[in-house]
Length: 497
Ligand SMILES: Cc1ncc(COP(=O)(O)O)c(C=O)c1O
Image (cartoon, rainbow, N blue to C red; front, side, top):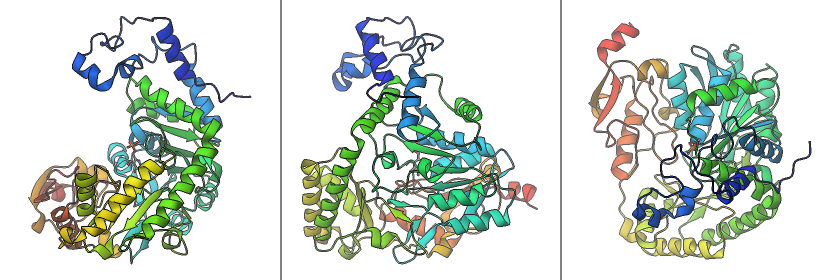
């Protein structure tokens, strides 16, 4: 079937809706901005309300006979070499859960890279799937995790031949990518599907110099946030499907189970527009972004005290397989301050928001939207940071554990621990207790602690010193970590005598 990528069915239908002066006696109640508070209209602009219409019984007819969303999804699938694409307005947080629930069910096993995002852990809690943790590849010197190797998945299947499939995160928010083709082969030798959490990979299909795209590497389903590296609006996500190991109707049904009945057409329009933009201009836009990222990287490297992590730092035996240069990860260790302090200072002084920050790094995400006017601001802020580093010292020390001390015993299923009776205990007394909550430094959103893990002193000390240094733990019951939510003693005795 020949598809015309100049078309953008959702955007065109929105334009038609407006031209026809369509009027809904339906939600949304603002009725094309008419009812919205003028003060809200002044801030948001009426375009937001004009694009906010019912998806069926508004944009399309009540039985969606115009196939507007379906045609937009077909065009997206075609653009990214998938067989089916589904749009989601609940972020990759929903998409990844839908994919997991299609591959495994309550009580079944799934191989999962332990560097998974919190939405994957939420999927485990909701579903009761039993995770078989696959260790990431640790850079001990930099204290950084890269995606697990194919060999690690091979070992996982050898030890758990009943595992229903595998899930790997690639690229990571730091821009390191897995050997997807090899991991897919490991899965397919057993006729098991591979899910790739490619939330950070919306741009990958559109330039050969970027890391392998999951649909080209043989993955069965991949999940992508269009708002992260693409031009979509926040929460716009897609999942793509290929091959025969996953039933598209089952995947659609799982997404239906989790999703909203009121999807935002604004988000659909953003996804549709991104696909057209990339199908028509993606290669040029990505080439320009890659060139710009190379210039920015070289300029930052030339600033005394800063080091930009490059392919040589991240890739090689025991490390990542591929590298995305657009997330520019900057090691500020030589400034003897933390990424938290540096990022706060840059926001306060220069009104620039950095992406990731930890005990020794900050990162700046470059996309096709950048040009010299944005990157110059970044570079001058970084130069200024170095000039003012004295003011950011001494920074509180974060007690970062070695990789082996970071890993805890999974004493019970995440679901069982999460839904058990709980109590809050002082962090000083929590070692040896079973966590009943996720504790996740954000960003990037990879939980250090999962429900069901037996807490250890090095991990608790890491998190506690992290909070004192500026680490953000938004999902912990006590974000300051004076206390930790653990499985109550009585519940522990009842469940695990
Ligand atoms: C690896 C990974 N997967 C999934 C998600 C969830 O994506 P979303 O924010 O679109 O729900 C994120 C968000 O940061 C992520 O980093």
